[in-house]
Amino acid sequence: MSSFLDDTTKYVNNALKYSDLSPGLANKIIICNSTYTVRFGVRLRGEIYTFEGWRSVHSEHMEPTKGGIRFDIHTHAEEVEALAALMSYKCAIINVPFGGSKGGLKINPTHWKENEIEKITRRFAQELIKRDLISPSMNVPAPDIGTSSKEMAWIADEYRKIHPDDINSAACVTGKPPNKNGLVGREEATGRGVQYIVREFFRNQDLLKLVKMDSNLATKKMIVQGLGNVGFNLSKFLTVDDSVKLIGIAEHNGGIFNEEGIDVDHAKKYFIKNKSFENYPKANFIKDSSLLLKKECDILIPAARENVITEKNANDISAKLIVEAANGPITYKANQILKRKKIFIIPDILANAGGVAVSYFEWVKNIRHIRFGRLEKRRNQLQLQNLIEAIEAMTGKSMPEKYKANFVNGIEEIDLIRSGLDDMMIDGFQSVKKEFTENDKISDFRTAAYKVAIEKIALSYDFIGL
Image (cartoon, rainbow, N blue to C red):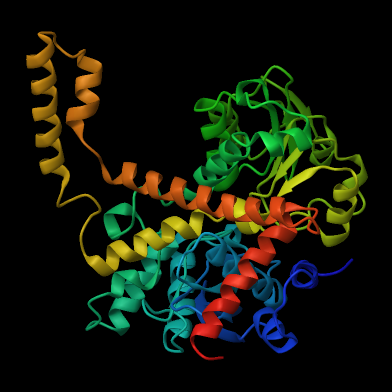
C-alpha cells in the first residue's frame, strides 16, 4: 500500500494536469522545504528516556508557517511531511495567510502521567524553540492527535521563558486555553467548520443532483468514524443544530449502531467512562467497527486519522456523500474506486480547514492584544437600544422580550469567531465549486480543491519573484 505522503503527492499531480504551472514551480510546491528531527532525553521514574520528534516546514510562501503537533506512537517523519503539505493547501483554499507546517512526537501519551507529559512537552518545546521552529513570526503550532490546549499552554510558557522580551510571545502557538490568551471557539473549530461545509453543500442544488439528495438535512442519516474532539463536535452540531440523524459511531475498539438515532452526548459520556462502547444500552454494539463504514447512510464522516478507507473496503462503501473531517482518511486507490462508484467526496483540505481558520483568528488576537469586539460592543448595544425605542415609539407597540434580549445583548467574541469561520469555509467551498463546475475536464471535488490550492500558492511564489 502506498504511503500517506505518496497519496498526497498523487493528488497534487492529478491537479497539475489541469494547470499550466512550470515543472520546476510545481516541484517546488510539492516538495517539503525542510524536516527537522530532534532527539532528547528526559529523566523520568528514576531513569533517562529518549524521545524522537519532528517538525516539518512544507512551504514558506507565506509566513509564519502553521500546523499542529501530534503525540502519537505511530507517527513518523514521512507522515509529518504529508500533514505539513495538507496544511499548505488548506490555508491556501480558505485564504489564511500562513504556510504549511506540522510536528510530531513519537510517544504514547496514555503511558505517562500528566506531570510526566508536561516535562516531555516542555523539553520538546525547548528543542523546537531554539531552532526557530516555534515562533510567532516564523512557525506557529497548534493541537493535533494526542495534544490539547494543555500542551499548548505549556509550550507558550516555555517560549515566554526563553524569549521574555517578545511582546507577541502568546502568538507563538494557538489552541491555548481561553484564560491563557487562547480563543473561545478554537476547540470546536474543526468540527464547526465541517458543519458549515455540510450546510453549504446542501444549499447547492446542482451538487445535490449529482448525489440524488434533496436539501433537507433533517431527513439525512449520518455515520461518524472517530469520536474525538472533531468527531464529537461535528456530530453534536449537525444533530442539534441541523437535525441530522446520527445512526452510527465507529471507534478503534468497536462501534455502535441505531437506525433510530444516537444521542452523541450520552454516547460520549459512556465511552469516556468505560473506554469502550461495549454493552452500550441505547444502540447495538459492533465489535468490528470497520463494518460501520459499509452501512447504508447519506453522509459518512471519517473523523479520526488517515487510511481508514482503502482499496480493501472502498467497494463496500454505500454512503452518498463522504466528508473528510480527518486528514487523509481515504487512500489514493480507494479514492479512485469511490469515484467510479460516483460517491461524492468533500476532501480534507477543504472540509477540516476550520481548525486553522480559527487558529488564525487566535494568532491575530494575540498580535493585536485585544479581544475581538471589545471596542465596539457597548456602542453597538446603545445603537440597537435606540433603534428598539424608535420602533416602539413609531408603532406604539412593545417589541417581544425574547427579540429585545437578542438585540440588546450584543455581539460576543464567539459570535464573531463563528461568523468569520462560516464566511471563510463558504468562500473556500465556492472557490472549489467554481473550479469543479466550470472546468469540464475535472470530474471530482478533490482535484478541483488541489488545483485551487496549488495555483494560489504558485501566485504567492510569483509575487516574491521565484
